[in-house]
Image 1 (cartoon, rainbow, N blue to C red):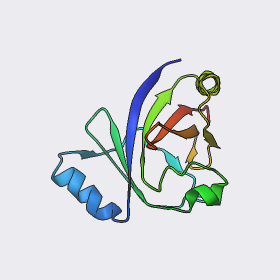
Image 2: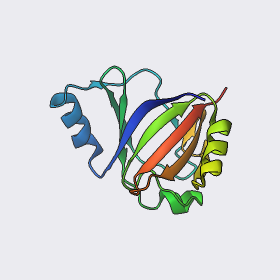
Image 3: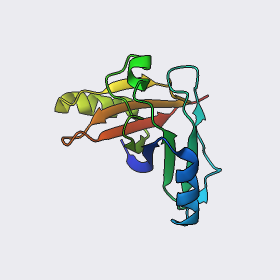
Image 4: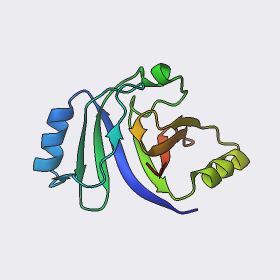
Length: 136
């Protein structure tokens, strides 16, 4: 099972301002490759801007403190933001978490079409996403 850093998600009430800042001040480029297809009818309908340094994406997502409740999930990845890793074997990673006693919320593809996502907390309460790209 391979894990690679995929993106950092910053939850904000100012998506447009953040997008301009990260492009204009931080020299990030608008991401156009491999963008997720947001499932806005299934619990998270916020606006998201995507920028990149050419390797790692930054998702500038509209803050939504009710997304966890709307989807019936304990972990809410868009209340404070999260760090995300991509894996090639999510089933094995979930078994690994279970063996380590780490609870997680399985969002399936409620937020992003074609991505099976799980979310959990690190010991300091930061949200971590691990996802696998599914065949569409």
